[in-house]
Amino acid sequence: MNGRASEIAALTLEHLQLVALSVAIAAAIALPAAVLLSRRAAWRPWVVGFANLAQTIPSLALFGFLLPIPLIGGIGKRTAVVALALYALLPILRNTLVGILGVDPTVRELAVAMGMTGRQILWQVELPLAAPSILAGLRIATVATIGGATIAAAIGGGGLGVFIFRGIAMLDTSTVLAGAVPAALMALAADEGLEWMERRFSPR
Amino acid sequence: MSTVLEIRGLSCSLGGRPVLRSVSLSVAEGETVVLLGRSGSGKTTLLKAVLGLAPASGGEMLFQSRPASEWRPIELRRRMGYVVQDSGLFPHWTVERNIALPALLAGREPAAIAQRVRELLEAVSLEPDEFRGRYPRHLSGGQKQRVAIARALAADPPLLLLDEPFAALDPITRYDLQRQFLDLRRRLGKAALFVTHDVREALMMGTRIALLAGGVLDVLAAPAEFLEARTPEARAFLASLEETWRTDERPRL
Image (cartoon, rainbow over all chains, first blue to last red; front, side, top):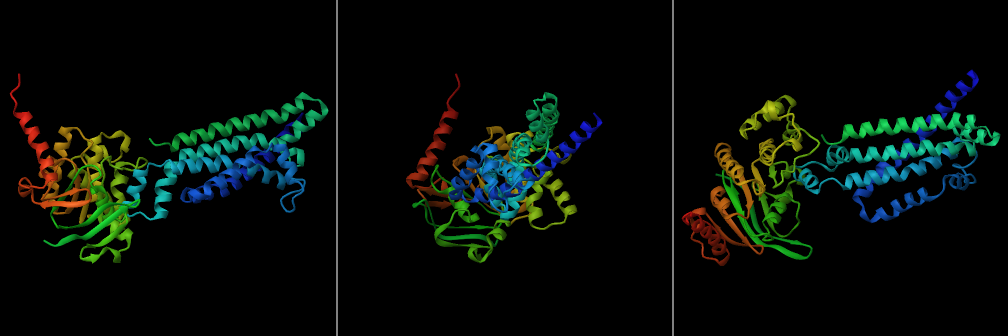
């Protein structure tokens, strides 16, 4: 039993790393992309369309598609992270874009009229006002990635999915639950924690 | 008194439609020029053109005797205090942070800014300790406009631009703010361009009234002369005023 407990702890940690890395990469791409798109209306349908497309591919199939691709493909964590990051892209991109575009035009114009620079307007006005929406995007992406990451075990990505696939193969419900329950708790905790942050950043 | 702003033959088009046609006027220190006109007469566009937010298609503008084209737009805007109808306060900042912004942009010292915010809140009749930590959503319409005026004054700009600043207020609050603004003008001696569609307000606030009709400067006169103006547009505005008076004089039953 002790061996099971330490394995759960190890795989939970691995799962957490998988999720954190994927969401971080997705955010590092989606946040600047959304800022750029907020200034370039013509690019929006293309980029949002691509992110939409990535979202519609079933996750297991996406892992399969990536496997043969050189550099990013292959069996292991790297492929898993790439696929999960692709998934997390859309909610972060879309929510950030919606948040920035939702800033009251009067407020934006006032910021320009008062002599703020473009950079000052972005960091001091647009991003803070878009923060609740951006955080909501991060929350959706994180919760979805925690679930999606369980499938990563299918291509050797590790994480709590290892228990689930093992349990299915062994027809052993308790092993399935050893993976599913921590993953569900993790998703709930992420949801609650990020929602609390959203509330904190909402206008008072 | 030195001229702060001089506009010569300014024309402006929005979406191919001419909005302003060869408008010339100047604003001197201590003077409030009221831009009066109907909706769509071009008065707000004129303010925006001064701020460089609406591109001019002709004419020129001098600010503090220097052509506007020689100013960096950001430097020019930081020398103008701007107030709009619905305050435009930043909703995520406290009253203090809102008022401090122009002073911060002008590079003032933090200690001096805190002192300045305090003075400005007092100047617009808001108790500093009660109001500086509040967020805009916890202010009434009149309080928001007071904060917006304090903010416009924060960097001590030579020119104020006010776009119907009191139009959304109830008549009693409006009158109170109008009187306070006149008092502030007397004390601070700022030049101001004040947009309104209310001829009463124009007569009360203006040292001169510039009547715009269809993007053309129709009348430019001091209030006493404006009452004698004979152009159809001026007559139309003045008729609305006389009509109000007549109604007021009607005996109550």
